[in-house]
Length: 513
Ligand code: DGJ
Image (cartoon, rainbow, N blue to C red; front, side):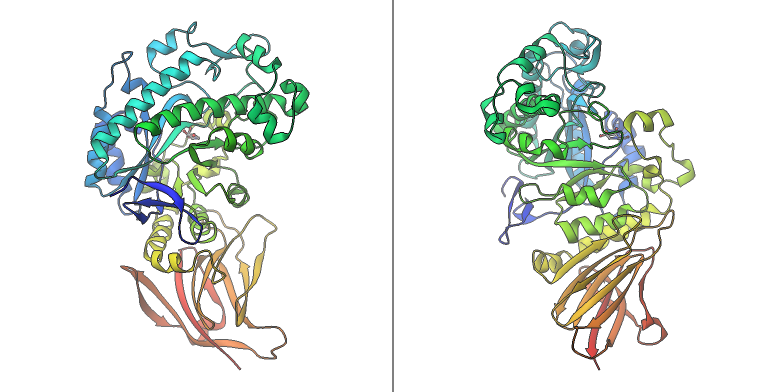
């Protein structure tokens, strides 16, 4: 068996291969501190992940617990989590809470927290220190490198044969929150120096950062130093065990100014720098809590950046974005955040306090789980059951996928060989998914349709002077990857082919008259 890898498949689509087979991460990320205690994991997490049709889970591993004493490593938590994941038949994506987590240095070991002379912090323009170890601090990066390499070495020894651990996230939502850049002495000297060759080559620029990039200088500068640090850490780890690695972004969002989101993190505007400097990473991934998720999904999916969503809102819209991400954007991973809560009674969910929402700039409705669990589970079930059909049709004109992008997006109109399809999204309702549909053209007159909250009409092609109707419209479900037909809806029900709030599938056979 070979090591998990992200590479292009025979159609040229970036794909995660686990045990040499394509693997689509139907995932969820657990809360930040859940994995710091095994009893908590046992009581509050593992059993709550059952019944969601997940095949993988994103679990943090904490530097402060792994290297509590400098240079002494304790892998107990890692091993126990791997053991348990195997029992639960789940794959793991480990999230390395190293030097940075949501910009800050929250999870570095106590010995590092207390030695701020060696492990110096980012400073604001007025000299105020932020709780962020500077990416220009060589000693700190060296320590993180060494911890991450030791972890990767250990995971290889413990898990290489089984490949329970399939992907690594390196750090979390890095960048400087609270200042447009690091103004500490070393950073200041670097900022005034000639830009590095690699950056000069990307933009065909020269001079100091300010001379080369004007108003963008601070962000480009931070992006370079964060990307460089992450590259050193990731590549050192990969030398020990070559698992696919990615980083995630706190998005650039309202109120937009640098430092209101972590500046220098892998936001879309600085991907060129990240891609060139941090070549060991297979993806720059978005954490999506904004109301306009579909725009972000589109923006973060491009040729050299396969879609990997480590965090996304977990309200009922998640199921629609899930179907769109896999069927429309060839996602490698989809993963709502705080996944263990989906199984709870919505009224029992401890909504993060408003201060946390404000500090993290999160739309509060993103955490409302009313109606989420069954829908996400149904969407994941469809992804699982349709996998062979999806693999056959993806990357071809026989599979098209749509999702409502915003308030003024009313639907779509699309064409296949013999029929056009008119899609009308239902009005948006609280605790419901969004309008979306994925259409698989199995033959010129036979389609699998999967979606929520929209209605469809098939039309003959323009100029044909014909109307389209159903030979047979079947509801049903996929069980063990086989279509099990239910009712044939050839009576009143076929007047409109309508998807409701639960992700489901139809098979439609058409004719023209
Ligand atoms: C994004 C971060 O990456 C997560 O660790 C977590 O803090 C969520 N925001 C919000 O709870």
